[in-house]
Image (cartoon, rainbow, N blue to C red; front, side, top):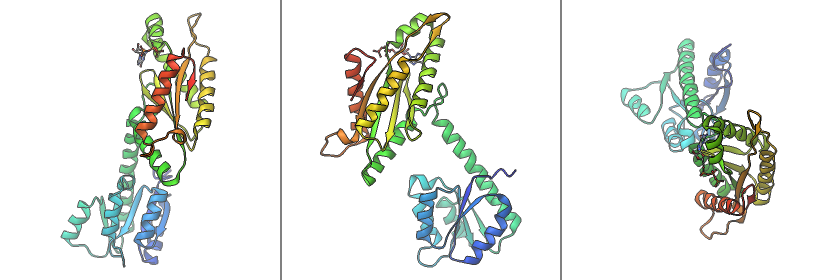
Length: 301
Ligand SMILES: Nc1nc2c(ncn2[C@@H]2O[C@H](COP(=O)(O)OP(=O)(O)OP(=O)(O)O)[C@@H](O)[C@H]2O)c(=O)[nH]1
């Protein structure tokens, strides 16, 4: 099987012939091909589909390839997509300009089928390694949940969706109660097991669209997308009950574990300057503090 399965390539070129030619040359590669016939359509498709590679014609009417490349590199998500320029003739100055703009390669027309395939394969392979490393850097090794760095990045993205589309976002901060005595009594390795078991509960009780993260030692944070405060409270109560129902034992000794949860939803924050990730997090933190203060094993919003 090809190592390119499931990756997608966007071709941006005003010539139908080139689309057909590239399509024919890459047919055996099992990549998913996307087609755009001008820069504006190319930009839209790149944004909607997040392809793994863009083959970009340098010489298009209206907006040329160089300009589109500059636009792509100006948006964080799109800037990570490698671009290979397609061009009839290319002088040294243009080549240098293309590489300076962030292109990874260029192919001159008419294409040699073998060369085109080799260059596409190479760019896609590098993209795949890059994606893998990026994902690894965002995962907490002990629990397999997203880590705090990812949480912060993702919350910023979700807040911009909130701003653009007006969809509510909620955050739940989950902290294990009296965890220090568990560590002190049964040892750190058992403490780690407790953290891992709770991570599994959080993942299984929350929905696929929720972003479950390990925020720090014995603290977790969940981004509940498209969820108003009331819905987030319901999820948090389910989590609290599921953790309380966990049966953990050290040898034959049962070890009861509970969590306290603080919830904040964008729909209930009153701030004339608008809701930010900071205000949302601070509100969730304050709610968690109240849950701890009110006796633990509670949800506060
Ligand atoms: N085993 C283990 N322990 C950790 C880890 N990260 C943090 N801890 C421990 O978690 C404990 C947190 O204790 P505290 O913040 O004092 O709070 P607590 O005992 O849980 O009490 P409350 O939060 O007030 O209910 C500390 O003893 C940390 O050493 C970890 O990865 N593994």
